[in-house]
Image 1 (tube, rainbow, N blue to C red):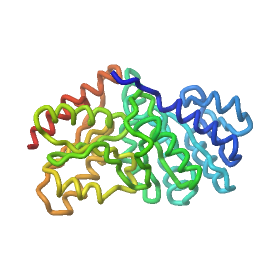
Image 2 (cartoon, rainbow, N blue to C red):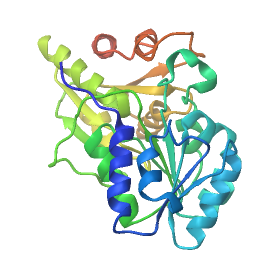
Image 3 (cartoon, rainbow, N blue to C red):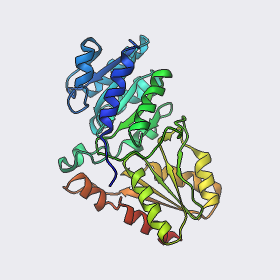
Image 4 (cartoon, rainbow, N blue to C red):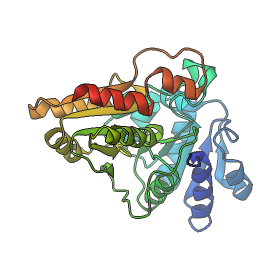
Length: 309
């Protein structure tokens, strides 16, 4: 079994490294130094970490103010509280005002497991995707996490980024690109397209292996960018393969699957789009059990793809 990693570790290491030569980098947290894995950053740069306490709306406003002075604020908080409590401030102070705030949703999806729906960040893709002017990215592994941070420091933009807590294997290599608004092709295929993001990319790749055993060629797309959306990759999938299955650790109402289905519908083709994700509040259970409960397993992804063919 492949070794797995917590992307928050890479996030913190990269930020500490880049901050050594770029004094514009600052961090803002909501009493979440530990859960955001920012202890090392605080130790290295105590004057560049601002802890506003449990005040997420104020935290986003502080980030916007710092960005207005030319700094690059990485605003870090647990995904459900950043996206849920501060949606108005993200809309007005970041997206509308076009302040270069990097909103870092830590431990997104169902990473908090047994803590339940209050701590699950599964609505965030739907909410944030509706805000014009806000980039929405979901790195799938350590390398994409690092590349995302490097790109945001080199060219800051109003951005909402999921930073995963659930351990995942490496699924990208140095030759894979990280380009704004582009999906990465993790595997070529001609029969069906599987689209994953974050925690589900490795699961869609494993599903493609299962399909290959049955003679089915599956294309796998790593949707690191959700906004801007890679319409070109979606059009290619809809016209070159017979069905599209989107696996997302998120609500399917308004999520990536809905975005893909909208694009396919406008093409006027008959390609089926099937979203796999949440359609009700989660029961109590571990993260791994919940991913299985909602069908986000290689076996179910593969079975869903086969059913469309």
